[in-house]
Image 1 (tube, helix red, strand yellow):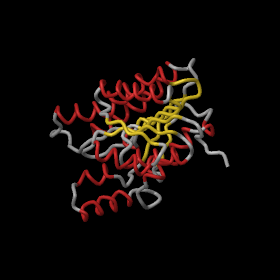
Image 2 (cartoon, helix red, strand yellow; image 1 turned 30 degrees about the vertical axis):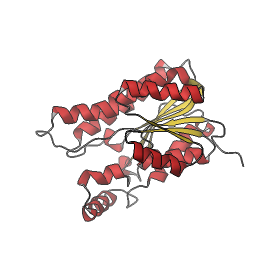
Image 3 (cartoon, helix red, strand yellow; image 1 turned 135 degrees about the horizontal axis):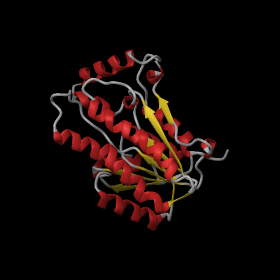
Image 4 (tube, one colour; image 1 turned 90 degrees about the vertical axis):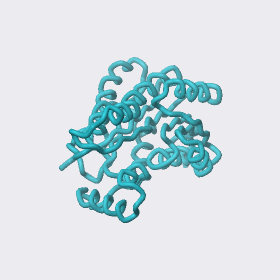
Length: 251
């Protein structure tokens, strides 16, 4: 049986844990050579070992343009092109209006907006016709979320990037789509409440109770949707926001 990404070159930012790691593993299993980035070298090394022989790790912070230049120089030298770019790196913290700080705003928008913009822009010389770019959004881009307005606004910006960029790049044959997970059991999500296991379980139970399917998602479920958008099965899918959320954004 032919693998869906056989011979493809894929880059996954923020690929050392959670959705990024699950997606990188799925891409590699389907035949792609995968480059992953992460900000912390030990976690990056562990992820590369978990993915296997088809993976290369490059330490990089997507909000730092010099790191992105170093990433793409390495990809160009080793593979010469990019067929699939999953712009997954990002994050945020929770503060209500009235307590939001400039530091929190800058950190969130640097990671989720500035980083996304320049991750895609600096990849353009390596992206050819038929390439697939996938931005990791969130259901919070269209829903109100208490204490999470800065993060939510940053993900709304990500969604509009896609709508605009497919027009900018319409003559290049590059597909760009957004994948928007709902609550998903990742280190980043449970980390919002700290290391207490009971608090983490309480958060997941609470979020799961708000999902029509009655539970939170798993990283591999998001990875499956990313694989679809990366593959030839989605060759005429362009500019969409694919919600992988158990129905949260539909009710």
